[in-house]
Length: 351
Image (cartoon, rainbow, N blue to C red; front, side, top):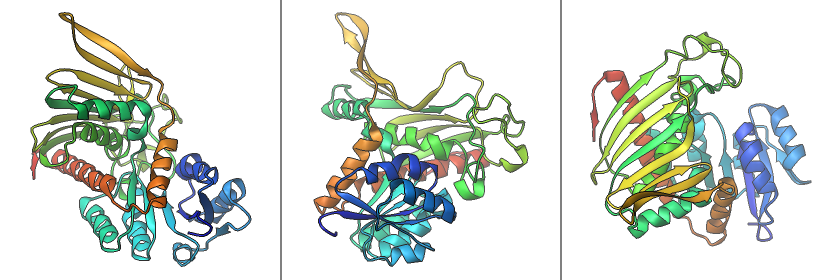
């Protein structure tokens, strides 16, 4: 670190980087954006103009960025199929890494990422930011305190009615590894597994469909899509049984004929109470005076992106390179991979 600041390099300067990581890093007095790389040089130059300083460079390649001695931390916001490649290269060259979710498109790559972080004594964090919202943090405290009793069932929900991303490689399986299950569904699954403390998989059964994806829809949030370019599911559902006995139902969609939507949502049920976690609040359901009561504990969420950023910076400044969240993201990756495998074979996958 130079002058007590974390030198940050960015691999990937697309929408997620520009809306999430870059502005938070630029506004943090503990950080300095020192290098940017994107396959689109013009995009990197635009981010340099918007978020960089006088000493911010635009690298001609990822290798050039990795060789920049000013870079301590690398933030990776690229298509899913490149997460492992870039993360392993960064970790191997002595950098700490924050990688966008999902961890990787398969568990073998994810395991290699984690192994590389441990062997090189580097920090690796996978950006499942929704667990950092105020209501999610409070829900975790309640679950860990025993307020719900014995937790046995959860729902992971990521349901859009018509919001299939139709730009870039977002709907291409070769680059993304799948559709809503690996994308927004992995956020909800992360929340359900985290809240219940369940990471050891027993068996899973999955289902996917592409009825609406292959037909197209003019009601889509970003306009209809070219059906020939979409080869991912528009809906996925699954049953995940953990070795501790907890059962998690997963539902994820880009397009579903439903009256309601829910994204980054999780319901957790225990013998003494339940929690319904949503982006706009948290509800606690329990018995009170001989009746079932529903208490709204939170309305609004604060800003999970900011809280996650502060968590990362605090760990790095303290020299804490433990990778607990990456270990947990590996379990999410294994579950998603197994759900896709089950959907393809029509049979459960056992661990």
